[in-house]
Image 1: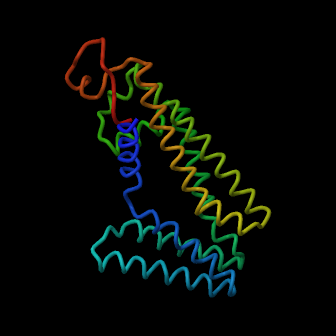
Image 2: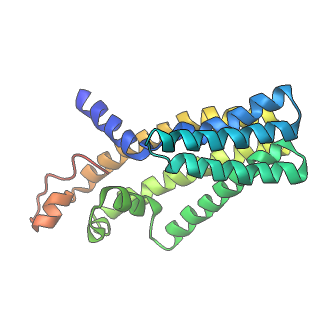
Image 3: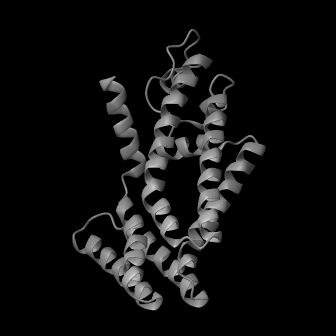
Length: 223
């Protein structure tokens, strides 16, 4: 059990090693400021906060890509809210992005190139031919379906809040509930993925590279 916990911790760090707070804090700053002031002032504060956060990362020689990405996200989101003079539109780019990702994941499943497969290839460097083995491929297909369900559910809830004009619900779901949901999906994906690989009885990456013949020990770590 302790081994599994350590593995999960390592896998989450691999995915979330960037400064996740750099993406979450600006929307919270915007909402909290908007609670006490008018829209335009809240937008200015959010933009300034994003810029200062990026400067802080650079000055302290920390990883600043997430802060930079977050800053551009703040600028785009602020532009939507400013031109429409609607605070809820601050979260419109995020919702549009989520819909686009849902479409990408769906297309990846239709063309039989599941997105989980490519995500694993990019983050871990596993050889591409290994993923397309008949005793490996189904695990990544099924995990991609799990991701599709998660993204569709998240997008539906966000759009529901937006259409009802529920800014508070939109903020707290997007910034707070969204992270635990994402972590839960990542953990479930890892546990289910390794279990599914074991049931498929395919080779581990090392066994595949070594050209070993069955029976295989199978993939025990890393999905």
